[in-house]
Image (cartoon, rainbow, N blue to C red; front, side):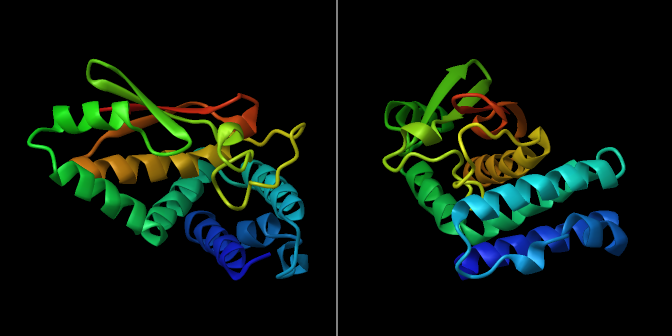
Length: 194
């Protein structure tokens, strides 16, 4: 496991503690200390799947989603270069409309955009990416094809997508998870209210 993955797991544990307290963190993070820097992606993904199940069981309603939203916000900060590149593309367009049209015509690799009025749909196809995977998140890339994860995990991606579009457009947007590859769909689909 790369240092980045270790850092992401530590961030997850931190978010659990902040949102749910130290005792919940201890239960959720059971076995994390057995993950080594050379752990295989499958081992990481399976441990995290179990940790999310423990989080769902141990945290009060709504708290597990808050944990994952914190992880998504942290991830958007770490991957701020993606946001900055999109903001640079946005700056080349006089209007938001022309920017969105250009983004739909030429989406980023592994994604596509669809629009219905004031609603934008961002679709990720991780299995169709140049290196097929279950999820764009480095922690879930090794998830075996037959294994599904709690939808709670995808609240991280929802927070990332919300942070991305809010910053690129310069205003808050609402985001809803419609379906995801790691919960059983063939792709990840987010509804973005512009």
